[in-house]
Image (cartoon, rainbow, N blue to C red):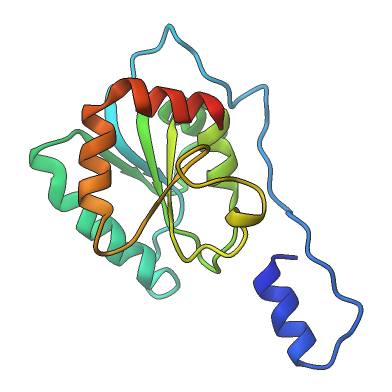
Length: 165
């Protein structure tokens, strides 16, 4: 259960509730491959059903406005796992916005695939496991554009953080 869920259940009077991370990745699918060209600058793979993911779709809309400058790819969960893994390996940056402030499966898959993970700065889980600027890059409304531009123009730094993750 994610920490946000733990807080909720404790507020409801449950005492014996502990956090754990229910997501991971498949190492046979998610790994960096230096022979594959990272043809996408910014990508997202996952659900963007607006009634459920209003914040995520709002963020993706903002990132999509940068398509005149960068090659951007957004895919819903229509991809089979091998196709999704290929897309992640072909991406320089994976832009992610979780549903509940959790480290979701895309976070782990992106890092395992050698892409630089961008994750909202309000994410509850990430701070317990990874360090901003070392393993991933946090963003918010005031800095996401500048941070995306920076890491897309500083390839050595993008690669260093992606490799560290």
